[in-house]
Length: 250
Image 1 (tube, rainbow, N blue to C red):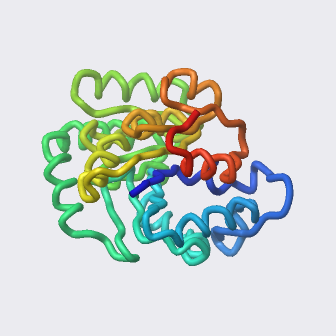
Image 2 (cartoon, rainbow, N blue to C red):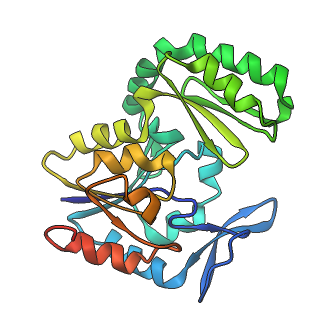
């Protein structure tokens, strides 16, 4: 069994703010507007990979369940069986949440609830409440342009076991036991002796990339990982799948 874990945004699909070369298809709508796209060549390659009995393509994303539901066109086009959401805290299997997985995630997150609630209170006092999103018990995040808020949040979380991750205007607080790397380890345990691969585009994905035997990432991130193959964006899934099909990534 070979398992390819993949981030979604800016990895498989790309925002309308980052136009793609070549032919594309819409994979997401938001409020009736086209939001995200995939290159048709990448779609065809991934679809073929998903049809193989001894291959698994597993999206692993920080997207919430509600945000993921907007990607129905992608799910239907590829037909993959599993998806890990909320940074891996939630597992969808054949389109339905896995209750046992969620229960284990709740158990792992329990020791960090006081910290998350404290940070939530801070965010509500420092940012527009409409931009504060709690996906408790798993994580919370805020969209902010306040240059001082990230440092304030990091100070609150320092030494607590809650990771603070930033992507553009968004600032996330996630318990370390719910990292993408832990999600990879938990999922792989279900399939025994599987070969693992991962592709991602940001520092959010480093734990996932580190947890797999082989990885694909932009050059600046691949340089941090001895088992990573550098790829320029937009990623060519043809190159990724070709490497996966080899005995080892070179």
